[in-house]
View 1 (cartoon, rainbow, N blue to C red):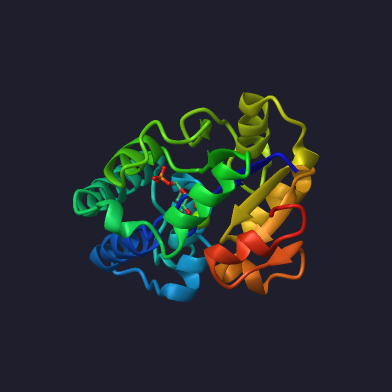
View 2: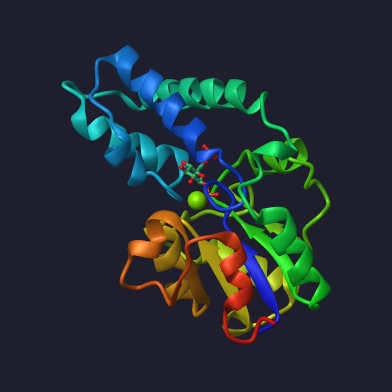
Length: 212
Ligand code: B16
Ligand code: MG
């Protein structure tokens, strides 16, 4: 194994809670029921596809124009919350684990569905840190399609089978498996039967076979 491709929200940084808060406010303003269980279905899913899931509970139909306005409203709320991000928002064990993997010679990449990835990496002090960044800005199909990870592996010039993909979302594990990557699941994805390696904490990555 030569590289790790990390999902962003919910793996490297706690932005998943901000996605929840922004969707919740948008849904509340529209009188649409929304809770954390529904929010778990949005993990790794693109903004417009996420809106489609939120609108499953709506009491009326929305036009395409209204949908774009709602997605923009959610993104504005989310970006407002991102203003508070600092390196302290890196999730527990992330800094030390990435440093150890790098010292062992692994290439490190990001594979995120989020179009806000560059902003987030800058805010948490990881602008320019990764060997490759593949995100919502360079893909046409969101997870569970493997495109975001396939592009990351291409940037690293490695075949999929030499890359671990670390994910918190079931859609992300499906994407990794569909692309031929070795999947590592944390959080929600640690309770998913398709996940190859289930971990409780980031530093558990260092105990995976072929790592140290
Ligand atoms: P944005 P990941 C995903 O990021 C989030 O998990 C998902 O909730 C979000 O809808 C998606 O990015 C798009 O994000 O609206 O910022 O473009 O988990 O793949 O890092
Ligand atoms: Mg995620």
